[in-house]
Image 1 (cartoon, rainbow, N blue to C red):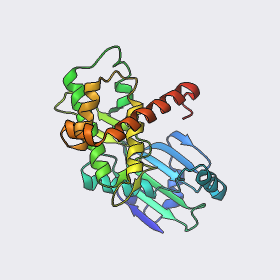
Image 2: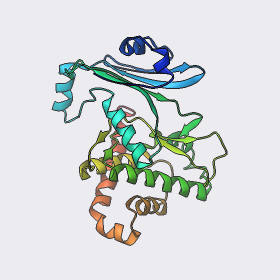
Image 3: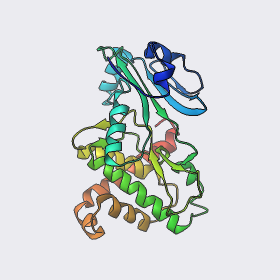
Length: 268
């Protein structure tokens, strides 16, 4: 069993079983599946997000593996990724409670509780009308540079996200949003993988997902080139020369994802 509990839950659960108490937390439920529950709760006036994993069963594990998908077995992926992101200087959520018990991966019980990031808006919502009402260029360029920097640090640090869309970047809105005051945080890391080095295949999957998620927001070719320069941290001429095969693949993959979205909507 692994258990890490900090304030305020250390005091709230003192002398109690955290695995029982976490199931008693109440609040707005965002996702309720057979093996996973996500909700927002409040303690002493502060917001927290709670993710509880109860095991998905061997049938679901085998089903995922047969379809070439890596199943999410518990909260450990997210806990490990959050620690690494903090080490890398990539802003994300802060874990205040984490627990895992059981050796059977199909029946493992685990949870993670993180501070709520608020007030924020995700980049998908922020950019909804950019195609028809473009943002101030300096603000757009600053956001592109920040996303590229965070993505590069994450990948160079051994993490691939597996849900790497702009909706998982939260922009702090506590103050006026200017190019100089941008504060972005990366969220939803329950599928993330953390290694000593990120395999090229998984890095590329993340980049394709990110590219797909910005196809409709009116970015120009120059905007995309800015991202590449800042992500690879190399002169653009070198990137275009050395990564030509990757760039062609990203375009093809992102367009396939887009076409699939057009056919099936949100059932991607």
